[in-house]
Length: 194
Image 1 (cartoon, one colour):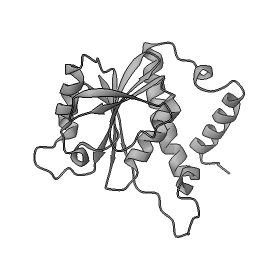
Image 2: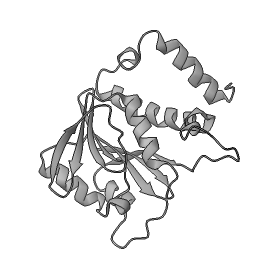
Image 3: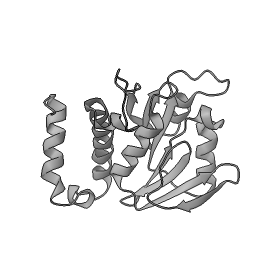
Image 4: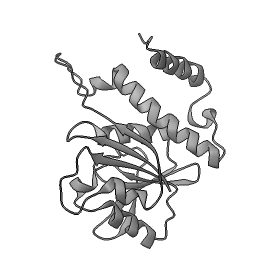
């Protein structure tokens, strides 16, 4: 298993970041892991992937998504993975939210994950704030910081997925969207966004 860690303090946007990344991956199937009953519930593909544990499928690859940090869910990543294994699901990738500093006894998510695979990206995120009042609670999704964050994580996962399966940009975006998206992302990367 290869995994991505999204590290941040409380309310820094870990779960919202993971939700946006998962939407960009355009999963063919989303299931919520019911930890108490140790089963999976099929959910609508338009559901917000936040504050819980999910299994998504992208191009035939299974991705464990721990959108609520293990400390918030009060269950270690080891137990979460063991439940998934017990359900006979082979995890190809994982995207895991983790607190900047895990203070609860018995939690060591980074080291626990290292026993199951390799970290391909650890992204330290911070809350996106400014001194303006905004009518739209999702105003931060129009910022350069947000766009760079999502682009970096999604690009890392796309690179991994393409190494192991056939994934084409046109499978993810419509043909008319590709030049526009590439142009916008290039501008963001060089710091020349509008």
